[in-house]
Length: 153
Picture 1 (tube, rainbow, N blue to C red):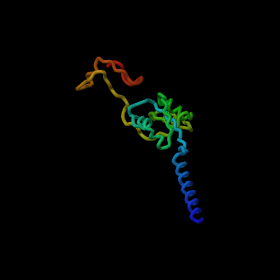
Picture 2: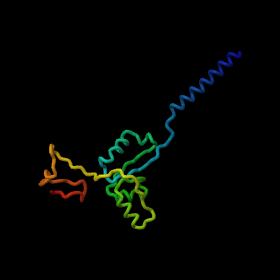
Picture 3: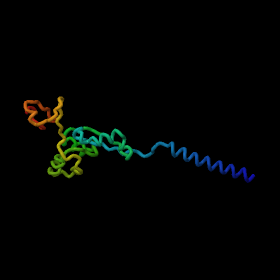
């Protein structure tokens, strides 16, 4: 009789352990992702690492659900962050300075320097083996946004 009770108790312990392992491995990830809305002033190649991380799910692995929104213009990025429509904004610091200098109590904190150089590239339909700036004379150049370059050189 003692052997039967030992067998039943052992079987019961094994069933409990197996069921605990089963439920632990099969339960859905209960941790919720923290939603972060990111406003960027422009889609640019300088943010390529961010776009790759978004596409590959690296932010989700760190518990973040990133919503990327385009808000063209530093003033619009600033407005989106100040209004609460965005949690974070990528733009130049000029709008932050304007808000601060305007005496506002609620102003943005600027941090990091994501890019050090101008985000402008010169591309051509035609290959130039030995490109020189003189090659642009008489050509039409389309600026990325108003005020970037004159349209005719």
